[in-house]
Length: 553
Ligand code: DGJ
Image (cartoon, rainbow, N blue to C red):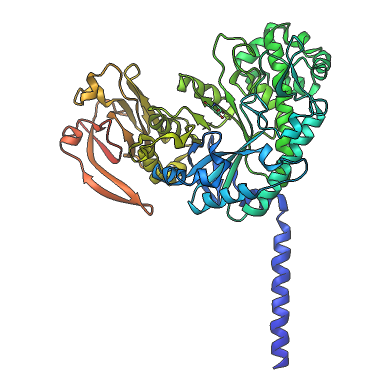
């Protein structure tokens, strides 16, 4: 009896020892990377992994002041659920968590995180700290009131503005201290649950009202040599620099030493490059310190510039903009990616610029207008985006009718399929209006010609002066099998390998996914596909269709 007992005890002790030794073999940092939300590449696509699975952010950003009380949020939660969001982008306000210097209060934050968790919503946090839309309005009162200690930028007339200068060590350390406290707290309350999946430190950083800071601390740096670290980056990456930036450097003779004006010329673009370097340095230090505690993916966002306008006077200078990508990346290796906020037209143009150099597309803000449903399909389809998120998402009163909610419903069902096919040229997206109403692309052996469904002339809306924007996502799942989801498109097909053969539609079913299983709702081989001539869905109808093609002589 005694010997059996000691054998059990010994086996138990040995098992514990073996388990703990085996665990020790995995370095702590790797374990963290593995089990908390992190980024991973599949082919050329960057995926966000949450609890071990790729996750598409079907998001919305709350208006700036909604996340400031439990009471105010109460009627908002059901709206978010009704629109099929899986994530919300929400501010964390420095002034509210550290209203007294060194004393951190996370009570409100915790209540709101719990509410989100109970709704099964993920959170992307926006750290409204040193900068929010260029300004420092969310810095705590004790920072704002002590200008000597926490200096502000100065314009070229020597006037101060409510923008903390990135050249002050005090400013940096105060921000870092608060951010580190936040990340420690998140680690404590959320490492198991993982409601918080990414962080955007600061918001729309940019210098106003002129292109660069003229504070004495800034002037001193401006007179110094361009840091060797930057020059090294430029030399190493010379052939891959974005053309807009390459041209500036080339225009001044590819200089590799001297002051900022020596290297880049005497112009406002040099002021902007200089500021971008120091904004990125500052933000990178905040991010690095936060990641040392809890390494969630962290990104920065930009208010897009208006082409032809002057930095500073015409738009916030030096933000993480496409023409400054190289500067932001060189100074900010801990920043995971750069993101555009859309309040401008030309969605495709800006997305093309932001997806250079392997930068993944994540749209943290888009004006919440009637184009967002189509753009979500296009972003996830054409750019294999990580996420999409209209701004002021709670502002609608008709959540049940929101096209975005209908599109998110389809995308949510298709998420496992989309993420499985990421990075293999098996996904495409389209987005149409009256002027841009056709797109031709290849998928496997087929050439797809896809048009706005109004081009058929069947729908009343076709006679309108402007056409509703429509969009869809296409996913290839077999040689001849595709899923098409969205609204307002019509598609026809050609065989690329054998153009003499005609492509026919073997069968089209409309349906949905339930627990990962495809369920057919309607079989469509009659009028709904014009008797085999095309695949279509009208502008007011959001559907998933499974399409099987074949070809004949
Ligand atoms: C962009 C900012 O990032 C948001 O916080 C918000 O202020 C919107 N602009 C308002 O349009």
